[in-house]
Structure formats: C-alpha cells, structure tokens
Image (cartoon, helix red, strand yellow):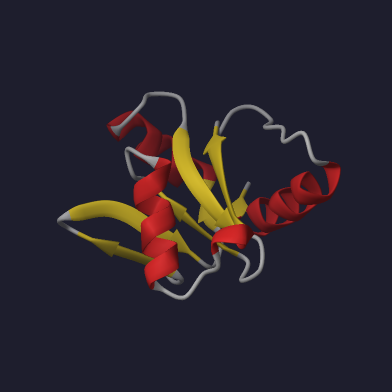
Length: 103
C-alpha cells in the first residue's frame, strides 16, 4: 500500500496517502473491535495508526521529525463521525483524515 509504512513486528503504520475504510475496519478488528487509535500530525499532513497506545504512535512521529505541538491523538471509528472541541484543530484533523481515509 503506497504511503503507509509498516513492520511485521509492529502493527503501527504511517499513512501519508489514502487508506480505505475497509483497511481501517481490518485494523480495528485486530485490535479494539470498532476503532483504531491514531495520532495526526497537523503540520506534515500524515497520521500514525494501529498502535495500542497513542503514545507509541506519537513517539514514532516524533522520531521522524514531528513537533509535539503538531500531534493530536484521535480514535477513528470507520463507521461513524469523530469530534474535537477546538474548531480550528478539528478542521485540520478532518481535512487530513478526509484526505487519508478513502471511502
């Protein structure tokens, strides 16, 4: 899958190009059932997905040069909408997720 980095030893992935909702459902089914943890880098327009903890995804993004202030942990529910209180940040996250999660 183009734009997604993964390792057989680590289920975390960096999505920089679209990932399908079916793929999110598959990842969710392997972990929490109905959702996937993700950390969105609102500056670089990528997101880390698939770890058990947001902190692990955050650490991966930080290792790749992300800035702490640009990282936002979210839970992706492939079959329903998500919400963040801050309207500006919510808009950034929705735009990135909308670009990276294909219908």
